[in-house]
Length: 117
Image (cartoon, rainbow, N blue to C red):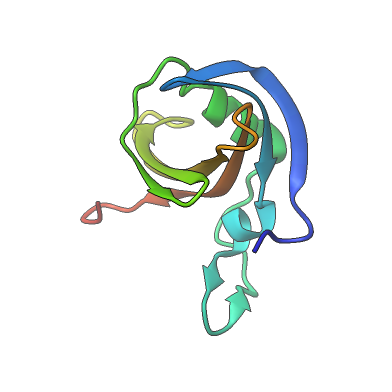
């Protein structure tokens, strides 16, 4: 189920696999506070990303061929990429609805700490 408070915005056309993404929906609360199945969104911020940061990161995926997993009409992607600060790697998780192939839904973005993959 989609959260009610997603941020919607247009982006520069971004090619990912066979998709041409022109807009994204972002769960900024999940990105900045985390989410657990038992407690919901976290109370303490783990990051302070703005929508402009997420747009910039997503647009940097332009022309990537990315492995994905399908679940019904949804295709899910996970990408690990050095960005923002050349010493840090981030993981973005997003999905694309086959019924709306020009829009990406960014589920989360976070820094990968050393020792994790």
